[in-house]
Image 1 (spheres, one colour):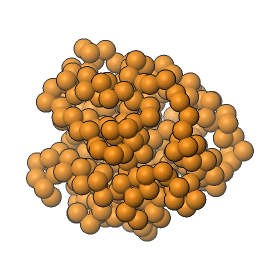
Image 2 (cartoon, one colour):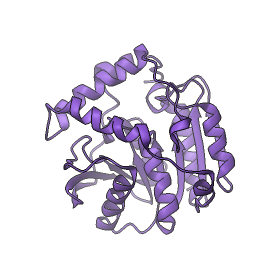
Image 3 (tube, one colour):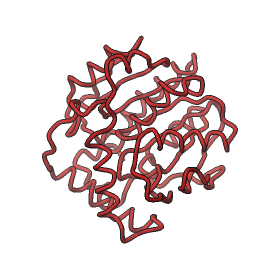
Image 4 (spheres, helix red, strand yellow):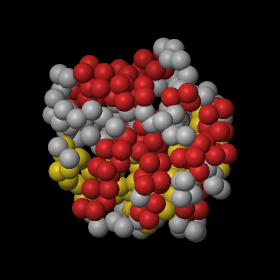
Length: 270
């Protein structure tokens, strides 16, 4: 597939199917069972999906990164996809600790992170609090304080994405009838978290690429610029002709940018 700007294909079919996993399993951590899978071999890249989604949303990215010589690690955030959750409120810090639990189980000491939306927040929190584990963060389409978010305005593209998320949740979740409660719990987190100050951002101790789609529906482009300016040696990339859903809309464009990031994070083109 070359483009899916309106997400019509995604609504009907989802992303491309993931290839067969090299390894897959669950890690029990902090009241949840966290699902993970790995693909390929080489330097480790952890891909963290967005809120309400699941690791299968990376179907267009995994083959490209494996083909470029990386070990790709996918994780379903707690309560998302095949991962479970308990009654604890969602927090990005809690989800960051889940990621570390998976890396510990896989004996991965250091990885580069590609985060999309909520996954980007989780990755950047790791970059601040567990910097020795983080080779770099590709921070796509998220805010690090509540002021970075736009007022929500429904669009047909957002509706199609939401429709797909609802169908996938019913198919994958251990609690398939709880989608509305799941959305409410994730949305509560998103309303108030994260809330990083400029000083917090300045303490990010890893290489960060901040990326945003030209037409992002949720995040202010000025906020992305502010983030890049507030972190040491950060880079800003504005992806043309795409929105919050660039990995699905124009996979070739997105894959080229993350491949360049990965090569930089590991100090080579791999």
